[in-house]
View 1 (cartoon, rainbow, N blue to C red):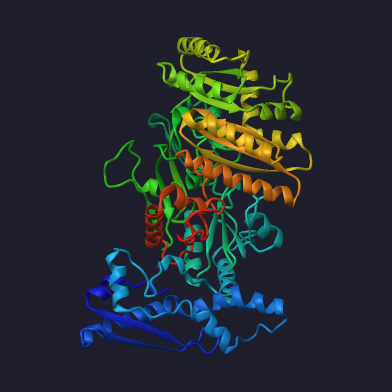
View 2: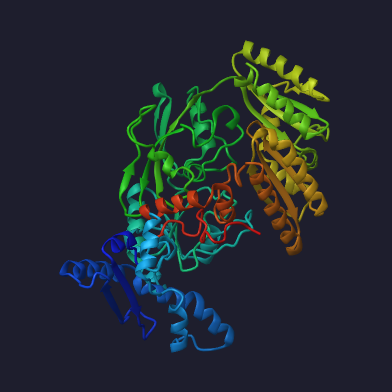
Length: 608
């Protein structure tokens, strides 16, 4: 609660004991503190040093804790019991404070400092005890936002806008509406919002294309500001000679590639997640897509630099535009995959790749194992670099595409691979011959190329819209989509065990996967609450299965609120603690997208 290095106290043989006493749940709080030195005497420097720490901590954080706890714990309990919520009883005050305000002995302080961590005086991480503004603070923040950003619809508080910005119809994790939605149009706008957020201790959540499905942009219970960056969607500069461009975070990857194509520029941005994804969100989740087998993910070198607004309100640019740099560690990557918890991206410089001729082919197999084995062999040949994409669609997915009516001629219902082969005409010819030979060797029952560019485009579009095809198979159903990733050699076993598990649970599903890098998505259908619970349990089993295979709980969707519980199992407790240390250093008030990415309590290590 009060950030204080126990190492400094222990080194001086000091014992700090805080005994607060609150008589009302409001901003006026009376507390008494006792400080003693185990060395037998207290110097004037000791008094001044500790006094400054305590006073500063109280002013910054202390008393608001009671307001938050009263609102979040006592008011709901009193409403349920039909009791007035105006005042708290002495017993309730004792109940609030007793677990959180405890004395620490010199021995405890010494043992804590020996671990090398920075903790508060209660022996818990200061990042786990944030203090947020009261409802009155939220109201004042909204008023100040209206003054700072005048104009129609810049600041929105309508129930519909708050609901839409705080939840997704395609996510089934707990959600909460925001208190206010702010439309940003520039970096200066973002700075203004961040400064008001910090002034009133109101959490701030960045919002872009709203394609996330792990609860990344849901609101916060104490009240939150949703910062909508979708209007910041301009391409600011194209440097064709350097194969890069600079854009705002609300720009969508499809629009960027269409603009380049329309201007006759033979370049493209190769990261291709779901339709509608924006650059800011792609950075936040560390996305990838179908092109990952050839071009890698967001954590490769595709973002040369980014402009970021920090929780302090400072604006930084992570590096210059040079293709490479060994000047210090890569601060750009610090924000890739941080899910808006460390900073808010307002500009990005993207590296572009040459647009290369491609050809699309399809191969069908009697089972997933044979399909994946063929891919492994293809990628390990000299022709592997010419494979731009290789996607797996299981038999259920192929049936869904037929049912959705998006193809002129139905596909045979079998486990299927879609290839996108790139290069010169000669390279495509030689690679195609090698691919055809290898898939036939692995039991492929059908191999064919798209006859025209239009057919190739349609074939690939069907893969990109797998979600909607799955929905079309069972009208009235909803779909829970999740992703995991494992070493490619373990993918057949994972897919087989997952399909078997879903069948035993009586759940209908489709599976699509970026088989070239071991990443696959399960799209699981449900119609009611009972089936939703069954789906949730199946997703938990799938994630644990992937981690046990030396994989990850998410290959490209990100963590959000949906997968925080798996991080300690996957990364280890110390690695997660390091992530929290970075978060606490940059955002000590935990105002940027709180409740996402970082597990709240390391004691809850795994989902049982």
